Image 1: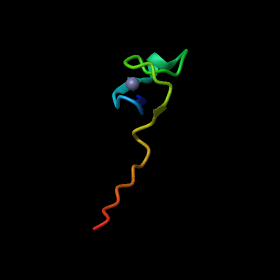
Image 2: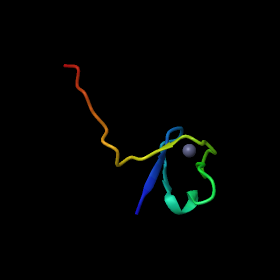
Image 3: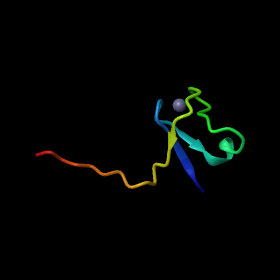
Image 4: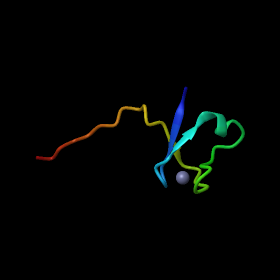
Length: 45
Ligand SMILES: [Zn+2]
């Protein structure tokens, strides 16, 4: 199961909801990303 995350409110959005429109059901943002994508954490220290 694929889930996206809203870039704006940071909530998980099910792919089922995005079948027709790519849009966050919570805040209406159209900017979503896949949290599965490797998130590189860099510690500067
Ligand atoms: Zn949102």
